[in-house]
Image (cartoon, rainbow, N blue to C red; front, side, top):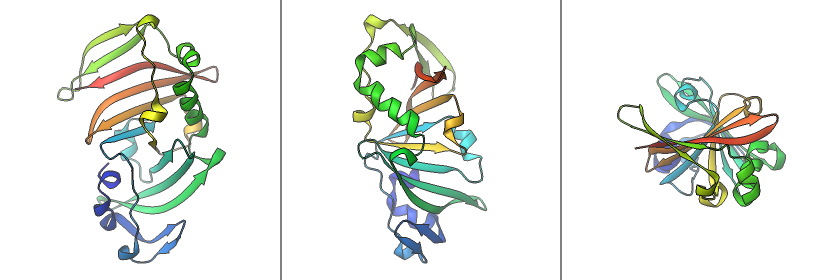
Length: 204
């Protein structure tokens, strides 16, 4: 999270020589920091918990622009006790990370009928305590109480975190971090090749 939101710290967190779309960076002083537009609201898409991902030796992070449909993919590796950026590449179109789910997410955001069909009701909103990590209460929403969700316009960029091919996983967790702290998680599941939003977590 700090790597994305504090570009000034990136120079000390890269492994050189570093392969990038512009060429190979031989010295940290020649490195151009990766920028994330909305540093106060970071949207993260993954299938595993972030704790599990951070335990991997080679996690990847794709910063995906929902309007341009292009991704900047960052591969990290652990150097001793530190994480280092090991490689940067660009993808576009059908090549972008998790293209199928990202396409669904944009359709879900702009089509009210599709959103109602692909949301499972009664829809649970679970409130968790950040301090105890325990669920405190659950509220169930019915269709008449639903307010349209617009992930694509609310978050112009999303970070896809994972350690494997996301296409083989039948679940997605869309987590929102505000000012560096977890605020919300939207949980999706794939049933018979179709994606559904099944619950929301609120962390306070």
